[in-house]
Length: 573
Image: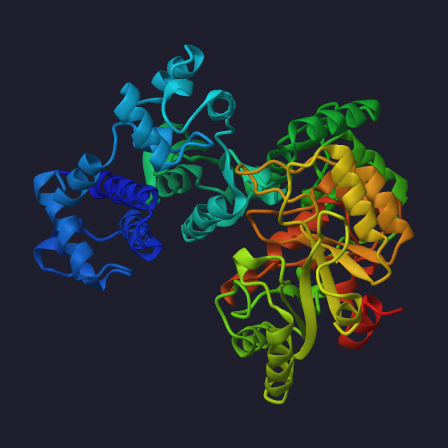
């Protein structure tokens, strides 16, 4: 008989196999939702099945309840076995190799019996893959590159996925009656793009009770280690988690110590030693006397530094930059500073919601304006808006504007063509309120070609916002090659700004390039690149990335009110 976590793993496998087969994505998602419901379950699963109450759980319908009951009672699933039989052996592992589609997996299994990544590697190294119909030497070399990327892959997970677990976990820890205070620390608190583990720090006078409570979080699959003050676990899905409990008087110091990246803590420790202090997770020690630090601000004051936000605790350069501020009030951008949603798609291209639905959601979020920036004609794969439909869209925006308070701005995400020209004729571009200029095609140009293309685009006379600058998809697609600093020089000299893209799968541009852009006095927008009303709520990811790059409110155009923003970004001079 399987327990709830075993069944959740089986449901996730079914979801992955359905995705590989190319089945309806909503069907695959239903299995994922069922797995999540089981992992979070606190009631007795056997009783729910016995009394036929599984459908009371979020996302579990009659069909899924039947499969869960079958797994619970028999330890097997006819549906899962059928899916396994329909697909080649090793398909789950092989599908993780970049370049390996289901069609290729089937072809290589039928021709060479390939059923694992190791077998695929041997077949490529011995030149057998190139002999299979439809492959060839070039494909074989590409697959070898994909195998290398698979073997050296980062085991970290996307921040957005880590937060789906971390935020309920934090609520769980805070729900313990012995917890006085608790927060997430580590890479999550620094808003890094990917996360290796979930760190929680808790203040308590009864650490053993909080440790026990932490270990009973429903999605804990295994307790790896525990003592009176710490607990390390493995969650279902493989992510690790660690809890540190400290007395309340040490909480600020422990949270600070568990937040900073190793290079940052090393540099800060060196600074402390220069001042005759010792820095550890219990604060600052001068000789045998511990200095009082009720807050993280207290710690920095003892070190002669202004407060350094968690997002900037990466390396020694962040400490140098903080010291250079010399006490000036120079606060980072905050989510509450953003007054308008920029870079939003609707059903006119590849968005899921109408103009009115997007407007109402932005209005409900307290936004003062919303840019409708659907794809331009060159993005035919995304339903790019041709001139005939553009007039129709503008008419609809005007009608919706009469029914909503949020200001609607007519915009486009205009493709940067191979020549560097922007999609749509100049006479049309000048009629928009805002232009996002992005690259969606020919991303494999060499660095010199791509740089010329982007510099030409930035120098176009209309004002434009450089969208998802380097085209990366985190853990899926590397940034395209270009000489970024040369492009930033062109942006600084042109009528242009740079987007910090809040899509959690993009988070582009990277903080290091934001810092370089700031040196040049370039202005920014923080976007969601929203393709649905739900995606508008990804704003926090854009703000987190912007803060990692050191952005201040005065550098962010959509921290302006509607009239000032419209004036700042209007395409025509």
